[in-house]
Image 1 (cartoon, helix red, strand yellow):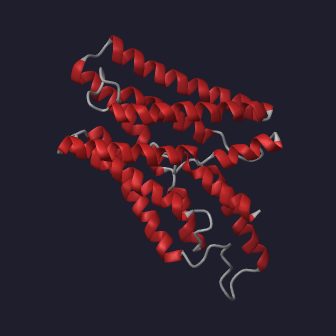
Image 2 (tube, rainbow, N blue to C red):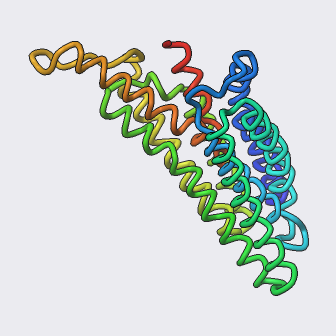
Amino acid sequence: MEHVARFFFGVCGNVIALFLFLSPVVTFWRIIKRKSTEDFSGVPYNMTLLNCLLSAWYGLPFVSPNNILVTTINGTGSAIEIIYVVIFLIYAERKSRLRMLGLLGVVTTIFTTVVLVSLLALHGKGRKVFCGLAATVFSICMYASPLSIMRLVIKTKSVEFMPFLLSLSVFLCGTSWFIYGLLGLDPFIYIPNGCGSFLGLVQLILYAIYRKNKGPAAAPAGKGDPAEAVDEVEDAKKAAATVEMAEAKIKVADTVAADEAAVVAQV
């Protein structure tokens, strides 16, 4: 029964994570139509690619037995992220393209190093621990990236840049993989996804508190002026853009790109 439950939550995690990986499609359709990456950042896509590659490697049978569902979704996520990175490289300006190529080189180096060390220098439990730690570190980084959006919501008292469905998906995805990891007694799965589930819950709580204000926050009466209010909103939009894929993680990251879709709708 325990194996059936674990399989169920693993499948749920796959489905929800796939939705999160596909969430930036709107952003990249805009990039293709306009033939420009504009002010969008390509960093989140490279970082999510690294996270997916490490997690997919960790789920392989000779690294971590009985975690093939981790490999299926993260392998799919890796393919999707590679497509995003290629599109970004095609339409980015020269300076941005060079920066992206440099970051892609770092991603490739880190992943290659983890693979070679785990294959040539480690075996058994040592290999699992090494690969698990690498995957956990980057998974937590991906889950923590929405913190800036959460701070923005509190500052502006507006959920304009934090779509409800994305926040709900992050919570459900993190929770599914958290339970999957608990049932398998795998700390390298339940620890990072437990963090993701908690942060997703915090986002939902913030949404419940500020759900009635989905537009630009107005300046308090008697304080500041309209120009200052406009500046603050513009700063908010720029801050939101820099974390477009943050929610995508947990396998998710990418999910922040949908935040950009909300920014585009406002513009």
